[in-house]
Image (cartoon, rainbow, N blue to C red; front, side, top):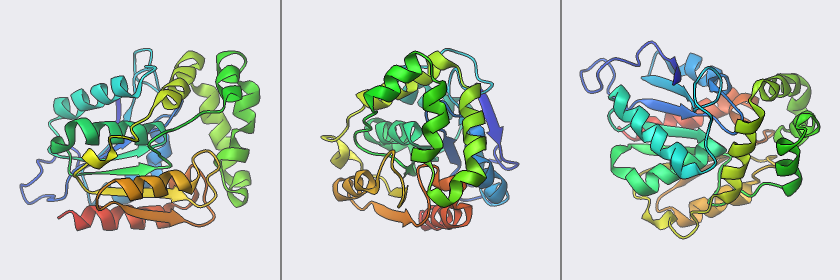
Length: 253
């Protein structure tokens, strides 16, 4: 298990040092904790922060999973092992699916969830699955076109490609397969904890309609659409994303 920890991460919640719930960040398919660097750096003085690396990702051991439910069980065990009391889960893409799964199965252990570019279903183009299983280079090189808003491709495209190239090919394929198999459409109304749904208006991988559907089905959910941002909205517009996240977490107090 690999963690990126904010300076307050181990401070006991409720002691007066930090009364807000811990923030637990979960990256997306073939990712690692670095996608959350701007959130950890910008919020570690305010909140207890953990950015986790799923098994087989980044510096974390293991071989990854091919089912969202299995990743969710791993996250649950990690939260318990760290002694985090009712954290807010912030998940991007695959991480959003994991957050939804946990909110449905184990909502009592959470203060809330934030889905970033998520959906009740997360269909993956068969060409992407075939490409990731075979020679992923063509898929990886084309990802910025679909994952980033046009105005952000020059600034972030190279970084995104480099990050994907470092990922284990089999783990990456398993992540995309897990997303493609995911479907909690009939269970969303079981979520009884606060939920914030963030999506870039230019997201072509998980367009806003998926987040809008979540809002319609999850009781009391809040939706924030961010202009000029795509699937990696937390990197594309750090300020707007952090403002939305901060306001949501503070509202939980």
